[in-house]
Amino acid sequence: MVKKTTKTAAIALTAATLVMGLAACGSKPDTDTSNNTGNTSTNAGGSAGSGDKNVTITFQNIYPDPATPSYKMLHAIVDQYQKDHPNVKIELDSLNTDQQKLKLKTQAASKEVPDITIVNPAAQMKPFVDAKLFAPLNDMLEQNGLKDTFQKGLLDYYSFDNNVYALPDGNNIEVVYYNKDLFEQAGIKNTPTTFEELVNDVKTLKAKGITPIAIGEKDSWTGSFLFMNILLRTNGGPGFLQDVIDGKKTFKDPAFTDAVSAMQDLIQAKAFEEGATSIDYNTGGNIFKTGKAAMMVMGTWETGAIDSSTVGPKVGVFKFPTVNGKGDPDQFMLAPGSAFAVSANSKHLQETKDFLNYFMTEMPKKQFELKNAVGSGQVITGDFKAAGYSQLAQDVLALFQNVKGGDLAFDNTMKPAIAQAHLSSIQNMFVQKVDPATVAGEHQSAFDANK
Image 1 (cartoon, rainbow, N blue to C red):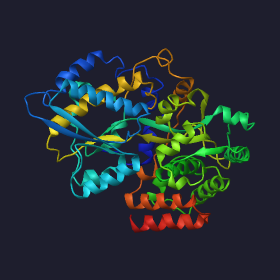
Image 2: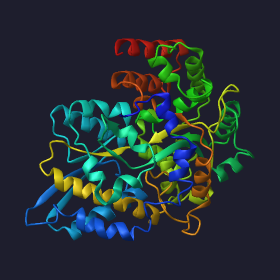
Image 3: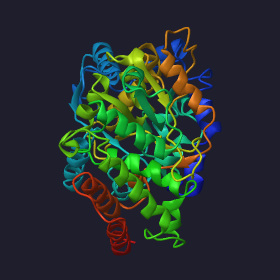
Image 4: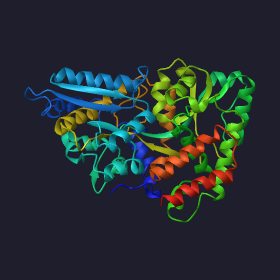
């Protein structure tokens, strides 16, 4: 059964789980997948590669940026599969995250889900599973030992009634990336360990004409992700949303209103670029990756893309600080990754599963080669330092060693209607100053209406 966004679920991604797959990254699925890869080409291609039947598999994904390692990984694997299986065409539909979410909702309403699509874990994917739009993947996971390549407990976030319905592309935590050169230009010698120091650093950077924090808030989950880290601190630890679900707390609790006040302090200090709500996630990220912003608060999946950018050698990383003296910096926003699901109505169900098996078996090896393996949801064998991974990547991996649990994102925890109200409410804070009590009331009204 899925561990639906309970405290137990959040704590499932503790240091033990994360280290097993990342910092310990010295187990298997095999960056040296020589024993798996050969089998995969034969077994995974069994249906798709046999006979003369031409097959087209639609593959919706969220890797639209050619400059990123994820894009290169996707195309390398797809190109190789098509070369090995000339009767199979993989038709890519590459979108940014919010575009993909909206498109999938429309497709789901007409029951025209692509052969492979992208979903987020737990509460976000449950409506699709309830509508029987996704095919169980248990049988495919047993091919070539694929199931054993995933970090222990990770697939629980994508499982309902003992069936796995999606395979994650990563397992990450939220951190603060910073440009060392821009910090030095502003005269900032140390990274902040308290929220108050963070706000002061924002003001110092702004006074020097440097954009303090890059964000793409047109894709509203970005602001929410940052806000939830603040709430994790003001609550003194994980579990606030679960306490609301269980009736132990409401959104009018001081932990929530204090988080709103702190978020507003950051916004009012002009921490973000002008027009943040009109800038999408990829564009916001590129503001940081081109040296035009001093910080970016984001998941560790960005490490590879930062490394491959012009500012890569200048970037360091630090933990999100305490807020009002509360919180443990070794508790993080946990981000079991977006995941690949297969349409239950696929006209080529077996061929699609065969391809996805191949894709997921090849992905860890390709990600490692592209120096994009930090935050993998699959256990990867390899000496990261010897493979030429940057100091940034090694520093990020070191953070995983001390993870003491944390929370899942709001929209992976609450029902979609409540999540949408939350995203809109937080996004509005970027546009105008608001009363924390009003924000709390908006959240509570949405929750009460959609219990």
